Image (cartoon, rainbow, N blue to C red; front, side):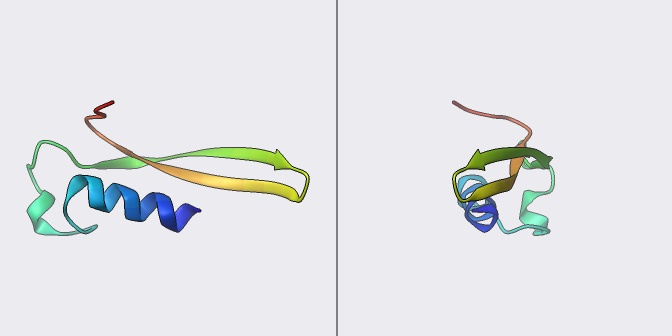
Length: 56
């Protein structure tokens, strides 16, 4: 799941992580926040990446 979130952000921003194309692009990666989901199969620890300008 964490890899899926990273891939989704890369597709949304339209440049790879650490790519110079993202420098001063107006939107960039902005860290991660964590969430824990308790399921019947155990705990699921997610790290959801953020971007600076979140368009909903």
